[in-house]
Image (cartoon, rainbow, N blue to C red):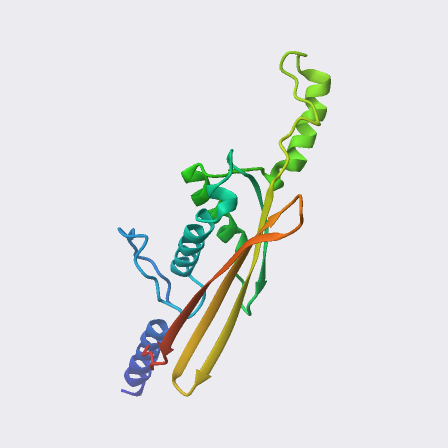
Amino acid sequence: MKNLVLVASLVLGSVLTISCGNKAFVKGQYDQDINQANLLTDKWSETDMQKAVSDLIGSIKKHPSITRAKRPPVVMVTRMKNRTSEHIETQSIMDMLRVELMRGGEVVFVDREARGDMSEEYDYQKENASRETMKQRGNQTGTDYIINGRIDSIVQQAGRDKTVYYKLTLNLTNLRSGLIVWSDYKQIRKIYKKTRVGM
């Protein structure tokens, strides 16, 4: 009888250990609406990025540097500084900004990231390409404006309540004068309440 009780205890203990152990996400589905708000966590999310970029694009498109330009201005997207306590992939923010601005055709972009590849290709073509098709250094289009920015955050917590505040700031700098000709920011504040989560 003691052996039976011991075996039953071991089996029950194993079941409880397995059921309370690490869990993995094994079943999922595609979200039909990528623009639906994602508030699963109190961290920076794709919804925050979409909201911030959308508003800032609307602002920059209205600026005279773009609306009154005789030709589409040549713009370079540089870097965004992350002044938050989170790991935020700021390059994704700048990529989304560039893609959305290009869709309207109001501006064109030079690719800062491709400069190393371009330099290698010039060297290769100098030795291997025909004179009719060879591209040379010195014929590239110069940049008119540079876009850079910064993301800041403030986190406040009192008891079970928590607020997370983000501010995304962008600047458009005239490369000839060095003057910032446009600057704007988008604020996002999210409110959370801590709840007890069961096993």
